[in-house]
Length: 42
Image (cartoon, rainbow, N blue to C red; front, side, top):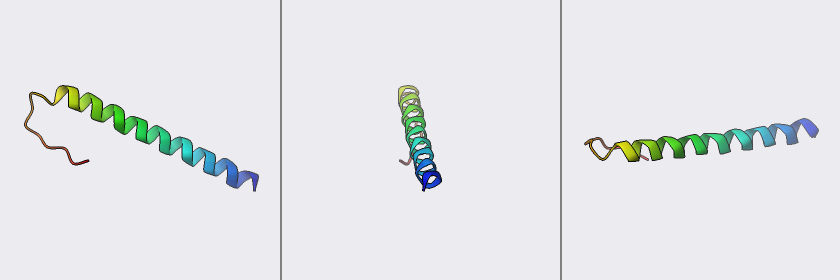
């Protein structure tokens, strides 16, 4: 039971970090993509 809760918490943290990383990458790309003609699929 404890291991399951710990695993879920770790998975949630990993998911949150991955979403944060995606948001950061999108923000950086958006700020630098004004001079590019590349399309990015969400």
